[in-house]
Length: 144
Figure 1 (tube, one colour):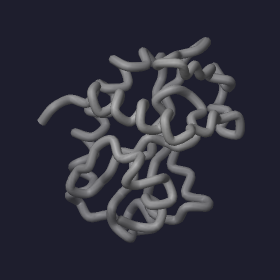
Figure 2 (cartoon, helix red, strand yellow; figure 1 turned 60 degrees about the vertical axis):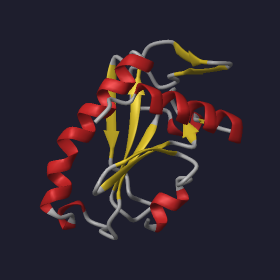
Figure 3 (cartoon, one colour; figure 1 turned 135 degrees about the vertical axis):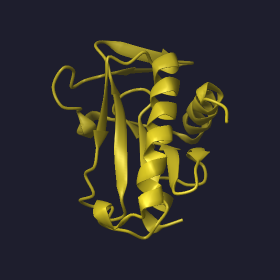
């Protein structure tokens, strides 16, 4: 795994692994269910990924949207490719909704709704919250 993937907490945050990508629970949650979709390659430019990685994105985005629709009931889903600090190809996947969403004892408001996500106001997860949210999302993931 590349350094960007490790920085986002792999393996503790791993929700699902694919041939060319990993889906990680975002350690800092601007909205409930926020993820990082990261390419496993060392590529630092989107266009440098192999064709197979692009083809795999169709399945992965369907899986992400299915799981987050069931768990969070988002109104919109933002895929943000920021890559300013962490150089390897990755997206921040931010479910967007009006109000709050909860899982267990954790409740998170979408502080930016309906404007861009308020990334600076994200809730930093502790170890127990990370484990609980990761396992919850794994349980929502489409099989196969």
